Length: 359
Image (cartoon, helix red, strand yellow):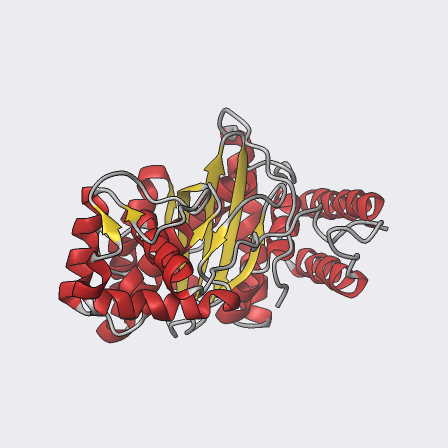
């Protein structure tokens, strides 16, 4: 699996033209069916959780390779093109208000696919937790506005979600992991590295442990907090008082009452958000001298790296395998000769574009 590869995703206004969406849907259906038939439902989700493969797939369908709409439109196309009863795969959630419907759509499709109730509950939890992690634990300044959750009747799943910051978007990929807190992503796509508080980093593990201990021992944590103001991890004061708002104090009080056994349970506490987690991280730093990671977990460049080796060298093996896989998928798909020719041409152009940027 590709770890943290990325590409530019500038925000583009407007909507995908209806005629283009219809054509993308028409092509996506046979392409996804071929992958499922030749491999498995799990393999399709695994490939979609690979940011390079996802980008290639979107380009083959005919969408702009460098637009933030790659995420929202392609996921929308998949939602309409993939029939759960035909493929054993459900696509839930989407952009904006539709993202909030993911839990109920997971439940509805789980019933349709005859997924066991306990497994359906676990899938709902994965959906909620992945959104909370990318909203609150990876504090990179991007606000989530898109959340797509795909799962199979066997319980495999993947998440494709996107956040926005000013005129740029950042995409987060997940795939069927039991580790939902420590470095759970298969990739994070961004336009550039920036400032970030990464509480999912392996380097933040002690901070996570201390945060749980502080919440479990509520009386101990109160002495570090001042009643007004906001927490800040920059320009930290010399004393050990941490300014927090009443809302944060209330959320921490609720967490104390629930007594979370680990950081995942802490993150899942309703009403506890990024400010609360940041406050706990600050106490860990100021009082216990355990610092969280401030390394942005995303990398950036077009698809496969830069010719000058920055931010990472071109991975020619991965690059070639991605293109080869997409070419074979298109060739095997039961689509018209004209559509197939256009798709292969799109893929060829995508490959040439990537080569000029990375070889």
